[in-house]
Image (cartoon, rainbow, N blue to C red; front, side):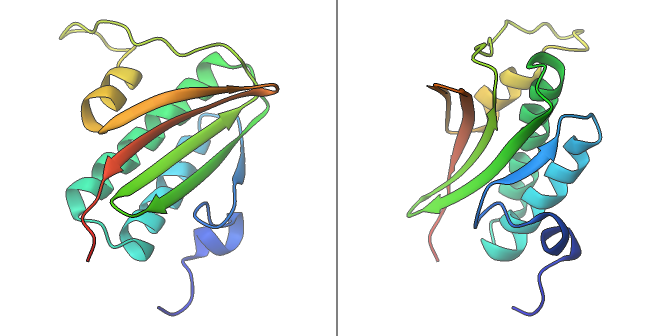
Length: 141
């Protein structure tokens, strides 16, 4: 497989351990690059699933940055037979809310997209925050 991409070497690999990212808007781009590298390079998922996964990671990060008030959050990616899972941990216990979306809405589409493009998603509450996650079915090679 060769050397890992620079982004993984610099920030860590979310498929091996949780990667901590600062709660800033530009972290969405970092999270997209990390997720894309894992989904494409390490897990060799089809292009459509890589694109969906990268988009959904971006939406979760955007929600965390806008709504949690956290200084940082953790990104983790897990793979088990038939499934790819992405988790975003933050210290807020506030639950995300899936809102109805209208065609002309310019915001509020994050969880709508997660709900639409993932096979399942949810939130696990913990003593010190929550993990918002989504899963996609994947074909085994």
